[in-house]
Image (cartoon, rainbow, N blue to C red; front, top):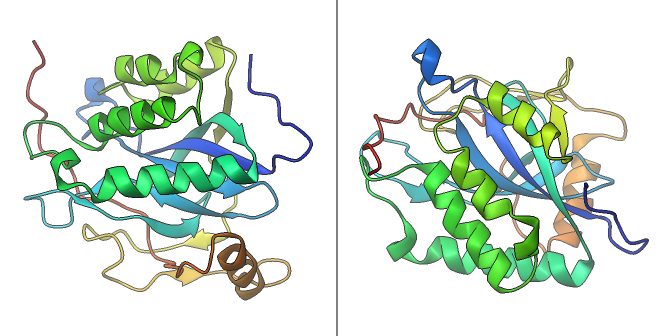
Length: 223
């Protein structure tokens, strides 16, 4: 069953899936990252690795719109208290900043990095090992996101497909953020959302840019 939110737990941890990523249709692997967001806001804190030059991966945490045109959908995997949110942010930041956890091209990609990040969250008990998130997403490596969506729903988790209308639109650029994105001001204004989320996230700076990713090279076959 999907996690049930305690009354004092407004933070949600999701796995965001970008692009179709269907190998049967010769797609490049879809991009995945961990999104931490407050249920009242449409901006998330994204933790992931990306490849801006098609040569090497970097850890690039950022605040960005939760839902936009490049998103295929997202799976909500946990509802967190304020304390758990802080622990998740600290754990993911520490894991991401450790260069030993950054994969080499041809060895793995963002989907493999996600496994390590989920394992760290299990170790500090932000997510429960018995829920099987790490193993489930390990099985989903290199699967197309239509298949992922069906599997997520089949195990009783909440899958949120990309919306028909978006608050954020931006150009596709391999460097992800090289070009300035166009942001539509929603109800109350993006600046209000920005300032409120920054306050809740401890004053971290915001980056509003196009969440598109470089095409990954083929991943080495796993034995």
